[in-house]
Image (cartoon, rainbow, N blue to C red; front, side, top):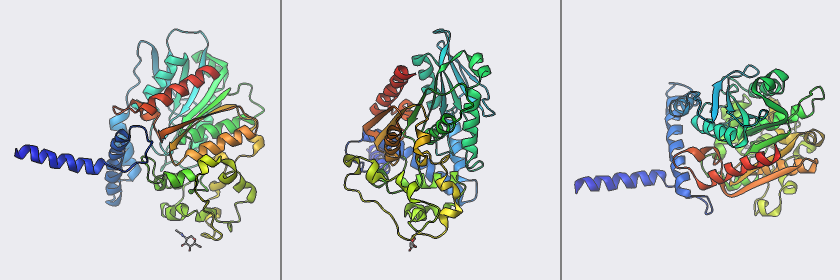
Length: 406
Ligand SMILES: *[C@@H]1O[C@H](CO)[C@@H](O)[C@H](O)[C@H]1NC(C)=O
C-alpha cells in the first residue's frame, strides 16, 4: 500500500516534469514531451556544470551525447561502414555491398547547432545506413569542427573542403561513385552548411564535376530576424526553443553569449544598423516571401533604433557563408535542384520556406516538403525508441525524393 502510494507520487512528479502544453496538431505529443524532458535534463545538468566552472556547457552535452550515442563503425551484410578523412575532416563512409557498379553519392552534414553531434552518432549512422541501402548510394557523413573551439568560418571551411574533395576523381573512383549523380545534404545546422556549400560550388566555373541536387532538412538560414512567424509561433515548442537557437548563432559567429537578449529583441537588425542595407532586408522580408497561411496573424518586429554598433561588431551576421538566405538571386540561380523540408512546429520553418521561395524565384526546381504535424529534429529522432510517426514519414519522403531526383 505504502509502496503504491510512493509510486503514485513519483509517477505524478515525473508526469509534472515531463508534461508541457503543446500546440494541438503536433504528431504524438507525449513522445515529443519525453524527448524534451530528456533534453531539458541534460541542458540543466550542463548549465549547472557550466555555472560551477566544471566545464563549458557544450562540453558536458557533447560528452553525454558521445557516451549515449557515438558508436563504432560496424559493417552489416548490406552496408560496409568505415571511418576515413575527407578533405581533412573525419568522415564516416557508408558503402552498399552489391548493387550497381557505379553508385550515387551523397555528402551529408549532421545537425547540432554547429556545436553538437557527429556522423558517428547512432541516429545519424542509422539514417545513413538506410540511405545507402535504399538508394544504392555511397554516403559520406562529415565531422566538421564544432563550437566553441571552432567558430565561423571553420565549420563552413571544413564542409567546403570536404565537398571539394568529394567532387575529385580520386575520391569518386575510389568509392565507385557516378560523377553525374551527386547530392549535398544536411539537417538543421548541417542544412545550413549544405546550402552554403551548394552556393559556393554552384558559382565555381573551374569545377568539372558538380552536385546534381541539394537536399535541405529543416535548415537554419539566417540570423537577422528572430521574429519570423515561425519564431513567434514556436518559441516555446521543444526541442529547439527560440533562445537556444539565438545562443547557437552567437556561439557559431564567435560573439558573446551576453548578446542573447539583444538578438531576441531584433535589436541587432534595427533600421539604424548601417551594415544592413534595404537590399539585404528584402531577402528575408517574410511579409512578401511567405504566403498568407504561414504569416497568419503575426506582425513583423522591426526596430527603428536598436543597440548601436552590434551589427558592425558581428560582421558575420550578414555573411552569406553563414546565412545562405542572404545570397543574391544570381548565386541562388546557379545552385542545383533542391529539396527543402520544413516542419510547422519549428522556429526554423520560415527560414526554409523563404529559401524555397527564393530558389524558385531564381529559376531552381524546388520540392518544398512541409509537415503540418512536424517538429524540429523529427526526421533524425525517428530512430529513438520513442520514434514518432512524422519522423518515419519524413524520412521515407526524403529518401524517395532522392531516389527520384538523383
Ligand atoms: C533594444 O534597443 C532599445 C533602443 O535602443 C533599448 O531601449 C533596449 O533596451 C534594447 N534591448 C535590449 C535587450 O538590448
